[in-house]
Structure formats: C-alpha cells, structure tokens
Length: 150
Image (cartoon, rainbow, N blue to C red; front, side):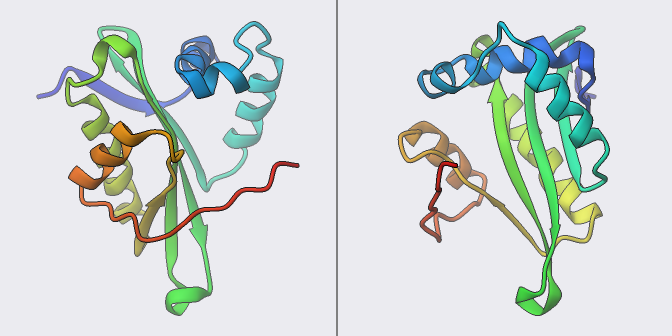
C-alpha cells in the first residue's frame, strides 16, 4: 500500500501548488506566488467544470506533487474523447522517487475511467529530462506543438 494520497486540489493546497509551479526557470518567469488572487479565481473556474481534474499528491500531510487532467470530447478519431495532462510538478526533494510515475499513472487510469481513447501532453522544448521521463512511460513525441501568446 502506498503512503501517497492523490486527491482533488483544495484552496488550502494552492500555496504549495503555486510554489511548485514557480520552482524552475520557466515557472519563475510566469508565476506569481506572492499574489494568490488569480490562482483562487482559476481554481473556482476549474472546480465548476466537470471535465477538469486538478489533483495533488500528498505524503504525510505534505503536498508533494500536482497535475491537471482535462477531458476533451471530440469529433476526430471517430468521435474519440481524449485527455490532456498539464502542469505536472513534483517537489524538488521528491524527484526521482517514483512520485511522477504515480501521478501520470493516476492520470492514465482516470483517462481510461472517463472512456478516453488517447492521452496527450505537451512539454516545453527545453525540458529534456521531462521528455525522457514521458518516453519511459510509453508516450511518443509524435507531434510538434505550437502556441500563440494572447
């Protein structure tokens, strides 16, 4: 039995989640841990959407990981439903412990439970360690992603 609990995020978890989002060179540029207001607003929107699943991994009462799983119904692939994994983060002192694998496995299992036919994710091109991690878990770098900042 695992000592890890993966459960929906709560407002009480937000400071820990935002700290993880900000704890790398990319996140440090785009996150604002000192202002919780936009994160609270986003959490309320996410909580109101049944296709959004933001979870935290908790070990011994401490938030040690997080991710967001979005369920997307679609027309392509014969009306397939897919899921998108976003915002995967693991506390720095937990990296290499298998926690990331457990989080991704939770997301894949939940995707199956939601009758998804495909799980997809994107990872910043600079995150080479993350790319190797996802490939070890069976993901294939099959597409090139594009973004447009608004």
